[in-house]
Image 1 (cartoon, one colour):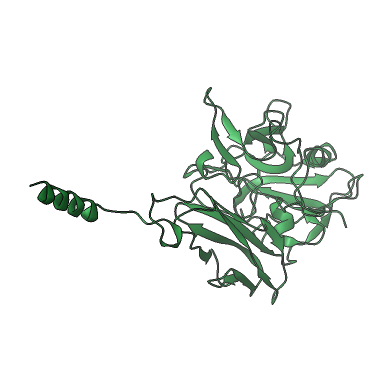
Image 2 (image 1 turned 180 degrees about the horizontal axis):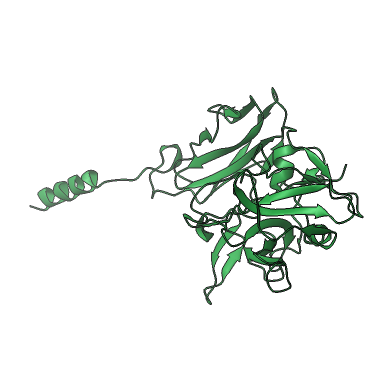
Length: 319
């Protein structure tokens, strides 16, 4: 009787399900917690290749197989082992996914396409004749969350924002960059210094000396220019025409491209909004230019918008 009970117990143990750990060792399944790529972003050239390295943690994760993918194979593709090959100008996000974790590398391949306009400003700064992603002065162009270099057309929420880091106990958003508890950065990085990423969409898209205007450069524009008759139209599109007060032949047109929040487009029928590269004092926001029907202290000037929203960008050039 005792012998039969022993055999039955042994058989029960043999039939129990076992989760295999890494290298086939018995033990509980260990999930992947994080995937980190060796670089976060890099400005590259057509034909250039780059081998990305990846770190998967914890080290004893059960399955550390990484799946590589590109958001745009026409710009840059990636092999099964993380070798990136650039094919054309543009921006591509390379993702390394393992389990529920992933890391992102942004391949930036600039294309000089913007046209600089000398507005006769005291600083000598030149403004692009049309929005980032547009090909004509009256076109809206692309929409960007502040600090992101890849344009989107929907889902402009905190949860999809590049620098989103959750919520605190007071229901305030936490951010992973350009945030005083994390760093003291107040201007979007251009990738010009060692270790810097390119967080300025105009620099990423156009390269060279192109970038987004600062808050003070927006002030210089409207302090030295007239806005003729408030809202005007260009080829049927409503917007504002900034004209140099002493040289009326020097002007740029900013269409009222509106603002994207969640999936809703504020069509801009009453005002326009454009990102600057400057972080606002309210830290979940960034400074932007706003223009309303009438040019006055309460209706136009520098204001702010939540960083996760989608706004247009008008690039500037220092040369």
